[in-house]
Image 1 (cartoon, rainbow, N blue to C red):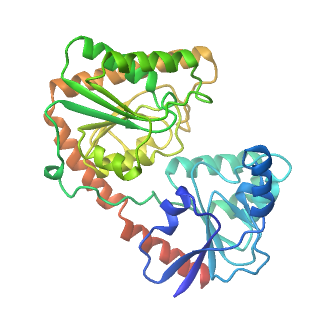
Image 2: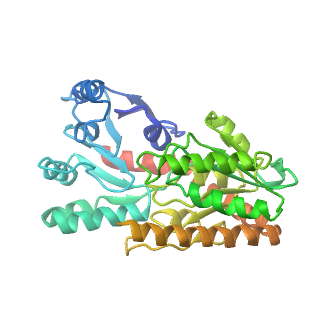
Length: 369
């Protein structure tokens, strides 16, 4: 059995590579000499190094047949490929062209975007900044969406309460539309609507364009409706997935998201999702399997939130769109089952772990040929 080397054991690497059901390859974590200074830098500063975190060097000593990275470029002389979420290299500055040269070099065999959006961003970046390498890099690009196993085989397996139940899960609650979600649910609950909301989040507001006042107000709304809004600071992932199977609809009306794994998890639990239509969301969610909120974005599907006025407009449209969809769901609940069944089918066909593993094995075979 051939060995695929990885240099991380974190969630993204596990989700997109290590956990897949390969038949002819075994994934093993191998030594990366850049991790030593990178770890020291992290111990001193508390931050990942802007360059070393996404660079790799094994000095040819690793015992593997090829490498598969996430967001990383490598100096290895073995065949390698990388899966990326927006674009790569992920660092800027004087070493960026070195990374681009490595992507264009003979040892890099494939660049796998997690979405068409990621592939488009990569092509746009290379064309603008490093046009001499465009052709070499463009021919290596392809899209493979992340795998997701089904959590329910059919809608009848869900254990649903009588009240319409909604769920949002994620650390950066306010970046994911938290203020707007609470504003809508506060209004609807004041009207006496029979709905419940589950929030799984630490509700950190730093780096989310939110304030301590936003945080305090969120806790006030939750306390006001404590019978209908349940807040969990933390749940184990297995508990989150179990709770999704007990909810009707999931929420991710985000301002910015590199992909949105929780959308796939919700859909796999038969839980159609309300999202904004930014970045990759339009590829993994639509009005047949969920609900989209149209918000300002550029031609690359990036949200237009460059200043305070943009954010105010974005927030207004997000809240209006969310309220419209939630009211429609309350008035027409039969649509939930229809969309859920379509979402389950989409997960089985587009994100099937066996199919993704088979596709990657074909790529590995070609890389080693």
